[in-house]
Length: 92
Image (cartoon, rainbow, N blue to C red; front, side, top):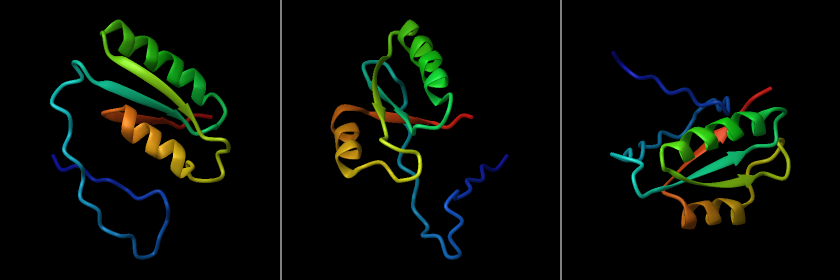
């Protein structure tokens, strides 16, 4: 089975970016949960946070100021400094 990743930006000539290595485990790691400010994204993140915390995985929450723009550089830098991985929530 082959994995196919699609670029949601709809660029005509998207830049090919190598995938970062996956974590072998979440044990002892901090997982960032980024709410992109779409309706009900917080509901999804609340449930994910509950599940990860029940497994002993530490989580930190972040939120974009608006869904129409990319996350501010400061938010991305904070996530990079404080987390080992991140999940972005997209829900409607």
